[in-house]
Structure formats: C-alpha cells, structure tokens
Image (cartoon, rainbow, N blue to C red; front, side, top):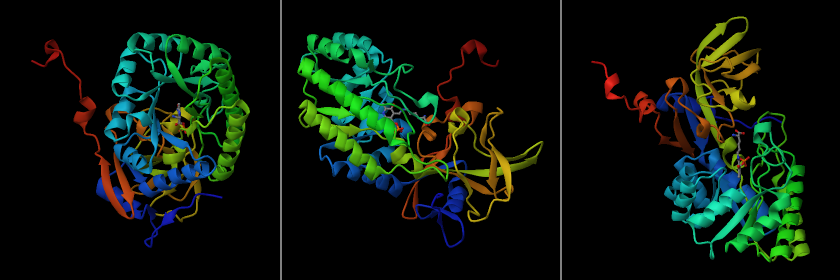
Length: 429
Ligand code: LLP
C-alpha cells in the first residue's frame, strides 16, 4: 500500500510532469497545484465503470469540492453536469460553459431570491422541503415546471459526523415516509415532478451504505410511481465516494461498486416498472480529491515541549485537518525518498492552537527552507479556504504534461480589504 509518488530525475517530487520545487520557486508558496490529467482520468474511470452497465448515465460533478473555473472547464469538456448548491455555484457553472439543463440546483434553506435566480438561469431545481415547494409555487407557474425532490432515505454515512447527510439527525431532504404525499402535493399544485435524489454523506469507502441507499431510494421511487403515476426522467444517488487519505486505506473498487449499484438499480427498475430513467451520481471528492497538492514552505523549526515544524500555510489555506481532524499525507517535496527519522508536529501559521496539519507525524529531518507537499488537497481545500488572520488566499496552478498555468492569482492585502467601507466620521483627520 502507500501512495504512488512521481519522482523526477533530480529526486524531487513531480506533479503532472512538473517539478514541485520549481513550481514553488516560480509561483511562491503556499500554492495549490492541480494535475489536469488526474482529474480527467478520475472522471473517465467513474464514467466508464457505470456507463458500461447502464448507458443512460450522467455524472453531476459536485463543484463545491473545487470551483476553480479551469477545473470546471475540464469537467465540462469531459461531458459532466454539475451539482450546484448555491446561486454562486450556478453562476460559476454557467460561466464555465455548462448547459443549464445539466446543472442541478440542490439547495438547503433556499430563499426566494435564490430560487428566482435559478429559474432565470434555467437550471434544474431539486426541492429540499415542503416549505421550498410552497414558496416555489408562488414564484413560478407550476404548469409543466419540472422539479425533483431530495429524499432522506434514513441511511447515512460519512468520514465525520458533520459529513453524514442521511438519517434522523440530518437537515437535508424530505422524509422518506412523507415522500408519496409530497409528490402528490406537488402534482396537485400543478408541478411536474420528474426526478428523485438523495445524498447520504461524504467520504465513504465502504460500499454497503450506498447499496442500502440505492435499494431504499428505488423502493421509495417505486412507491411514488405506483401511487402518483410520476414517470421518473432521472434518479440521482448523490455523491460521497471516498478516496484514501492514509497510506493504508483501501481504495474504493469502482468497477465492483458500479457493477453492484447498477445491478440493483436495473433490478428495481424492472420490479417497479420504472422504465429507463437517466441514472445520475454526484461525485466531488472522487474526481478532484487526489488531483491537487498543497505546497508549503518550512519557515521555522522549533524545539519546544514538542518539536514543531512551522510552515507558511494554515487552516485558512486548508481547513480539513483542523475542522474534521482529517489526515492528509505529507511528503518532503525536495527529498521525497528520504526515510522518516522522527515524529514531529507540522503546524500552520494561524494564531490558534488547533492550526496543525499533523501531530506526531513520522517525517524525514525537515529544515527551514524545505518544501512540503500536503497530498489529496483537491477537494474541499481551496473551496473552504478563508482570509482569517488577514492572510490573502493562495495561488492555484494547473499542470499538464510538465507545463504549468496560473489559474488563480495569489490574493493581495487589498483583496483582503475588498468591499470594506469606512464611514466618513471614522476617517483619520
Ligand atoms: N451531492 C450533494 C448534494 C452533496 O451535498 C455533496 C457533498 C456531494 C454531492 C459530493 O460529495 P462527495 O462526492 O464530494 O463526497 N467539506 C467536507 C465534505 C462536505 C461534503 C458536502 N456535500 C470534507 O472536507 O470532507
């Protein structure tokens, strides 16, 4: 087990054929480096695994994982649709060239203005609650307006309790027991429900909960069809496909996973006479998670009660370790083949004790000036970055076949102050 690292002839870490150290020199640190081919390969692997069993298959990339326009363009070129959670994500998707009908807007606690924006943008609306449905009916003429519902199938899973989105503690979707009633209500209002959706959680490496969710959602869809006559144009099982973050975590066997899921899906279609709807899934992390590295420079080594190796990024740059206690594998980019010699803490530069990328991590001897690469930093990394401590957010670079392009400039102090307005009475006289 372990991660396959690309090492170049200089003995440095290479990302998509580009030397990590040279990238850090050229663009500065902290720096997100995204490997274009890794994204394309990940997308194609999933698409192929599912579509060979069921040809009417569509991926809606969950762009909350990474909304960089270049990443979105790559996925549009690959034929993906988009799972959008906010007007901002809709806006970005359209700018990236996605056909609005390939954008599914699944919001939570959506306000009327946001629905209006979605309707004007002509994207598809996935309704999360009866409240949203009733308000939608006042905004749009329901006749012939196609909608779908997110259903909570009472199955949930995820790498952290914050990332479990099914089950009775979850704020998402309509309850499975009210599903038939809600579809009927929508029809009575004049709507045309054509889809059903669920998303049970994120960062799941065990196929079992997915299988259960597929079975349950299909049973719910069957019940709805029998009781309301709804003809489903699409059935969407959401995202959640995990990736290994630690060297000993197993990868998800996507072939087996897709075979089993499509098998159950097809069985249930026949069983309930549901015809041939489009089968959809919404992976985010699986597509972009392992495609990016965060490069950060060691700027201080402190022997305190423990040994702290301090770097020039923090939880403002990559939040996952502080927020979920997530493990991210870390390698020394200028000496990736050196064996670990000691266990140290790798600390960020934010003024909070929780700002640590790793505790007791076996590493080779690290010195000031060394470059480290934090792996699997493609999903929920830049997209969750902030300007906390008034630190500008980092740059992003896309690499392909040894070439690099800057795809997001490093922010400046002025960017951090952007939109602040000082009342005249507080101006310094
Ligand atoms: N579809 C819906 C409706 C979602 O809410 C999500 C993720 C996805 C798809 C994609 O899930 P994925 O395939 O990426 O697991 N910030 C957390 C993850 C939060 C996920 C939220 N929803 C993290 O860093 O682990």
